[in-house]
Image (cartoon, rainbow, N blue to C red; front, side):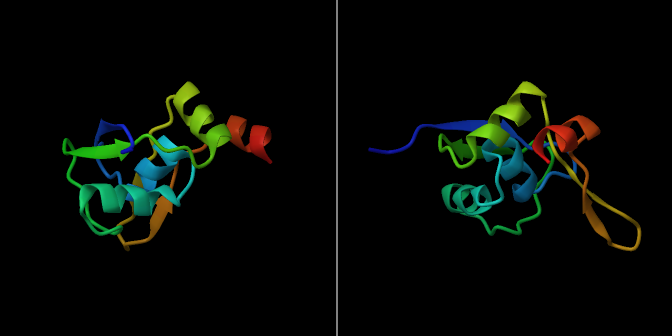
Length: 97
């Protein structure tokens, strides 16, 4: 039986890693997303494109946190190409540390 899938619209600066955290609560979702969308795990995504997201549970606690708090991570790049993932607030840190 195939997994049900939904589509997610890519936001500016989002990567598959960002969407994996947003939808699955875990970076392991990158490989599921890459496979299901027939793209590389490091593919540069274009804002507005849609990514098929299979209905899979990897980290239910984090997945529910992201959904309940409308967390939509986006990787930021500085001018010197340093990449930082800026997604979580102090509330998250207190709750999960």
